[in-house]
Amino acid sequence: MVKGGDRDNPNLPIVKRQELGERSDYNEFKDELRYDFFYACAYCTITETEAQGIGFEIDHYKPREKFHQDRNKYSNLMWSCEKCNGAKSDYFPSTEQQRKNYVVMRSDEEDPSAHYRVEDFQLKGIDNKGEFNIERLNLNRLMLRELRQIRAKMWEANGFIINGILEIQRIGIDALPGSQKAVFWRMRVSLLNDLAELADNTEESIRRMNKSPLLNGINDNNHEMKRRRYLKKIKALSTENTSLPLKGMVNKLNKR
Image (cartoon, helix red, strand yellow):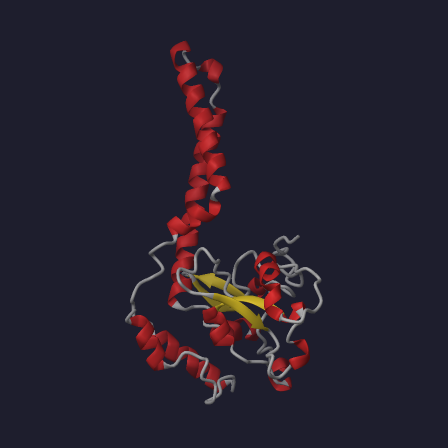
């Protein structure tokens, strides 16, 4: 079905969705959306197992109120965490905003990583499109910064484990003393069996590793105020848009 995009070609999407057309109720596409987007948010990439209490929902890329004809079309639906969906809200760029690349990126049409880079676990925009998406979707919110740090540690740990396994595999049993051959053989078989079992239970491993580090009460108001000033400056934040997180809501969340 789908595979990741080619990092050397930003024109290739990192998600390839099924061609499913239209149904009477867009909610009927939920299972297909989850599968096509790898059970992860189309915008921030947080997975269902990493989300820790943050719900997931179906987002209409083109707002259903403005584009009623696309309401039940699969190609207009995105699997999104509630944080990104709330931040995106009913935003759809005007002609002028499109000209300036103030467009919410679609991972089924392009590789978003071509528009930003990661520095100290924060995303930095390479161009207008990258900077806009970081601010509009709040892609540097506290949970995502901590998630990137956790993922980096997991990646380093994987490399360490793999190197250790390769070293064990390189050891020639015939070169060992007779009394150690059987012990070493049992150890190597047990290790490979454990590795296979871990690969079969990746989801549960992710749940255990991401259970608590993402949930803390560090105040993040400065980041939120900076983000909202940017959106207001480029006229992408409406005073009537109550779906975007307000200061009072942020304070409430920080106390959780």
